[in-house]
Length: 343
Image 1 (cartoon, rainbow, N blue to C red):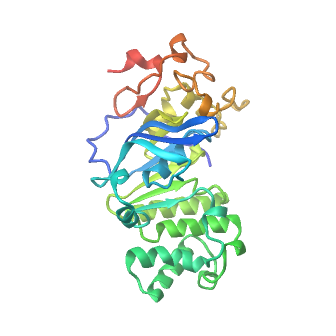
Image 2: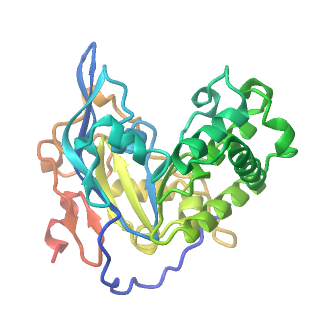
Image 3: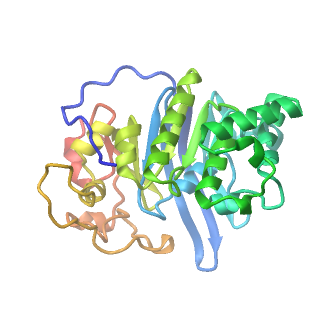
């Protein structure tokens, strides 16, 4: 899939409604042998109704931990949420008791997990696992839940869905298990869908079908939204309205798809985009790569988390963490290079 976006200058965005979800200064840490790993360190993200928000960055940047933290699925121990708020429809999810939270998980917030090989329970049939969510949250009878499960499995491309309800996860391929995970997340038509690498194990044709299904189901729920976590920037360009770029457990840049793809301001974002293959008709050349590797979460620099790999590093970058500068029109960037450009 080739990334194509409108590169015309971004117009002034309309007045936004109240966020569906507002993540404020989220801090999720892990106690490990070498100390405390700050996997998510002060992340703030707004998710608005009727939008698909892309969350991008290299492995280890904090994307999945941020998503799991919002519905408190971090394993404790070794993990714990050290601070922050996650407001969803006026309620702080971090302050709810687990009984209240269970009423929201699956029904109002659905999640497609990253690892279909391990997320499904190997001792229960596929039908039981898909039906469970519908029976609990939609109060369906067993026969109604079965019909709903068959319909949803058909929508995500499982052939002979009625017969395969009695199969177990080991009887499905990796791509088929991924589709089952998507069916479980979508069966209650949640207001917010968190999709963590939902198309990783799928071929290109099926990937397009699943993304279209997610868009269709989101449109059926008034005010619904999707958080799409992915490494595939082409999928982001085709699917999302806004993008959050993460690195080192922090938000590094936020903007519309047009802003991020046509006017990236953070050197890390520029590096990610430079690593994409040239669009059809453009001059072909060697792909660029960001030098070095992502450092251990326990060995991040004291200042800018990207300074050890940045080709535009300033002396102050190594010692001073830059704030998120507001460049206007909803475009935010965490980089000292843009200190004087903020209005």
